[in-house]
Amino acid sequence: MAKEPVNAVKERADWTKRDWRRYEMKKNKVAYLFVAPYMILFTVFTVAPVVLSFLLSFTSFNMLEWPKMVWLDNYLRLFLADDIFLTSVKNTFLFAVITGPASYLLCLFFAWFINELTPKIRSFVTLIFYAPAIAGNVYLIWGILFSGDSYGYVNGWLLKMGLISEPILFFQNVNYIFPLIIMVALWTSLGTSFLTFIAGFQNVDRTYYEAGAVDGVKNRWQELWFVTLPLMKNQMLLSAVLAITGAFGFGAIIDAMVGFPSPDYCVHTMVHHLNDYGNLRMELGYASAIATLLFLMMIGSNFLVRNLLKRVGK
Amino acid sequence: MKKFKIKKMRALNRSYGGDVGINVFLLIVGAFMALPFVYAICSALKPLDELWYFPPRFFVENPTLKNFTELFRLMSTSWVPFSRYIFNTVFISVVGTGGHVLVASLAAYALSKMKFPGRNFMFKAVEYSLMYNAVAAGIAIFIILSALGWIDTYLAIIIPTLAGSLGLFLMKQFMDSNVPDQILEAAHIDGAGEFRIWWQIAMPLVKPAWLTLIILMFQSLWQTGASIYIQSEELKTFSYAISQVLAGGIVRTGAASASTVIMMSVPILVFVLSQSNVIETMATSGMKD
Image (cartoon, rainbow over all chains, first blue to last red; front, side):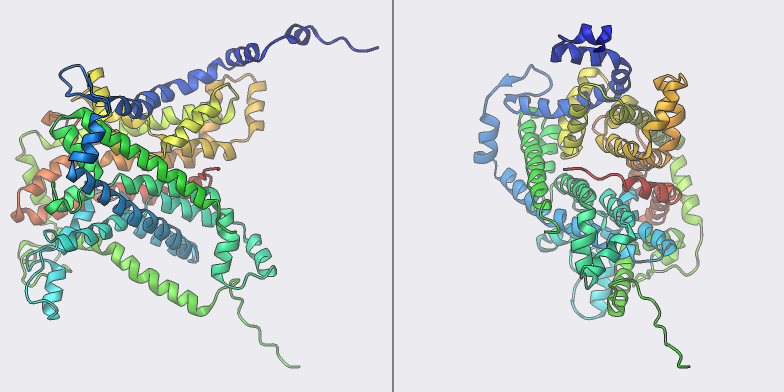
């Protein structure tokens, strides 16, 4: 005798997808309660700013009057009439292209090197490398070390060694500012990505290395490329995302070290331009256009790098 | 019988040359990384005359704590009582960090362990938001905050940080692999409510993750300096106040170094205490393609 389906199933036999969905939602009411506080905040302070920037970028807005629609005027002005903006785009790209990959590789390789150490030394060395990222404005010390008068240590050493005859004004000379800022930025850049890598390396099971050796891996480089990295793909992707986001958002260090505006706008980034128009000149529509472009650049390069990372270990 | 000479086991695929090279390299770069810290500590301990040696000397010869007392003297002469700045920083750091950990882990628990319509979409949204930097959102957040009337209140600093996406992301990934579904099921059968399961079962299991969230959040809030969201002097932070002391010019070099040492030692200490937990959390942090 064929079993009769229980009533509950019979009743639901003609449910559509939507009915099921509603049923699932009702059953999981408490889940929505759990995510609500975070999701509301996330929507208001993380998602809404992007949407708001995008919408305001088509307007002229000064906080006092209602925004006035100007369509593409802001963008046209940015690209056709604002030379400083173009400089800032160039600088932002330059910074991102140099510090993004460089900091990523530094995080990866130092995590790899540190992983070879014994556990006690490893935690100490990890601390030394990670400390610059969390120590607040200690990077200002580089300003003292490279200070322009003869009290600056670097100048002092160079003078003593007879390499220069008078002190170099490191932070006023356009030729030196850029490399110095890159150096300081990289010094502070071994942050969350670095820890992610450290954890990734520690997590690889030894047996994979042994299997790799049996299969003909001959040295540590081959081991890294063919065994370790493919196992760490997820960590690599997260670190890449963090590195890119960091590389584009860079500006506070420059303000603190060089001042604003920088000589000849030589290290003026889009973040500076954005804050200049947003905070100082209160041209919020214009600033929003800059923010929108910055968002697009960050997200665009993230997708680009995602695709590149798919090729690791092949 | 001939004795076999047993070579000491080397780690797989490692050459002596490579090991030495890597260690030397780490030593050099490590020294470079540590340089500003050593300098800050040395100058904080230097007596006044040593600060003005010419040519300057890097290391301290007669260490003294005078700079720290001088810093406190300078602080007590500030316009707003200095304790207020310290209170502000501690208040913002503690409330912001605690709030973030609670809000994020509550949501992470639901996203990780409950199957409800919309959860994939929500998590994807959080994951994608990692791709842009809050710096770009600053102006828009300012507009939103002023629409809410929160400009120049603690809320302006604390509430937006609660919405950070990295914390939720790390927490969710960690819960995925460290909270076994069986335990939760057993708790369900025993009649525990979801809230109780989250607090009494899931949260103790993910201690490394919330310690990680604490350090990431705390260090960024601890550094909160001058902000466009805050105008009143009474609401400004320790970091801001210190930058004002430093702005007092060159005579205050000693006090400035002392304040740098105080500022940096707190986050570093927090990290030292939680390092192993942080690493454990990061191990599950990967982003799937």
